[in-house]
Image (cartoon, rainbow, N blue to C red; front, side):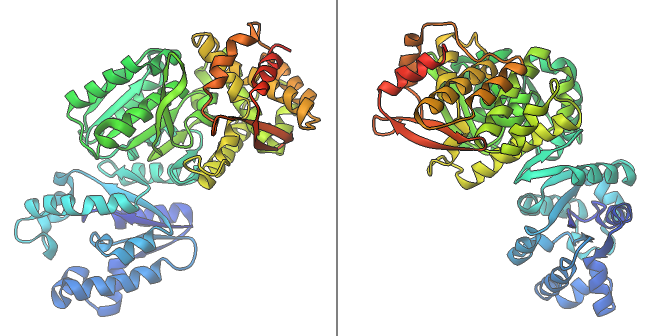
Length: 506
């Protein structure tokens, strides 16, 4: 692994980089020092001697050399990111941004002495540099860390960040992952969307984190449960963002379960035609499925998620520690998405679920969540906008599940509905597609305390199944398991809807 540090002059890249390299037992390189060794002059004097164009060209040469090899921490010059070729190089390694307020930076720089780039008015020049360079730093940096406290504390946070499992672009898994949300929320305002039940436990620390550095946060509470995804709640959040004066580079942050992530994501997708989104999912269902993949949406009386958009999050931080306070029932219900993922995509994950002596905890839970999340991230990467049909595999069991939710007025939770839908499609696949593992699927769901049948009238589900989003050219399309770990999308006749609805009662 190579870690590069970027940021304005005075952000602490050399000092923090050196300590980080010692902690990681990596080699430390500083591009300014490499230039000094090459030409025999400090970087400031070399900048004046060579002129900016030649200086930047030489800087590119030493950057390319520094980013070769393995196990290095590389401190870059403040203007390194000005050249497109340098940004391309940085995209290939782990990049961490360092920042502090202008007063701190100028104090470390002794008011700009010996820094030609800050002449003749250091304070004004620093503001100008921040305005010009910040979008370029944002382009390459994964996350940002404030360096106003002791260097060791910044190094602690960076080391913790680098130790997280990166499941895909912007998707991180690890205990304590929630503590890094402020590193992705930008330097301006944030709209924090959360529910009262989550705010009581996790909201306070996250709010303080987002406000660090003098940043402003609008704390927006929404109703618990799927009622958060009503059009009126969505409209209220848009109004709050507008009154708060949020700009296009300022973030929506979601803390909570799948409903909150869907809702906040749709707000971020549509406010000012799109602003950055940071997700901190706090339920099994959201961590394993709902907070991943860039789908956002709200509900209509006619059906679930009928209004939405694709809007990938800047960061999704999956922290299994937040599941400690999840009610037992909600924890259990969310496991239906894990089982679904095992049945349709990952035979090893399903085998692990079959072996759980009870609800998973500790390493078992970490494996279950990270494995399910990684499987979804891989599918999304192959079909980000659900055009090839590959991504539809994630909806295994959801045709019946969404119908049950909508028909019940969302009195049946998503997790329980998915369990029933998964059992129904397993029975259907056994009867019509040679799927031999339906008894294993149903036994696993039941052992976890999840329902496998619905008590209502199957005919009541038909209008909702008829509006399923997977319909194509008037034909119903079902995701059908073929064997454990494999499924496919098939087109069926209208009569299949009645058969499938009846199997939800079986």
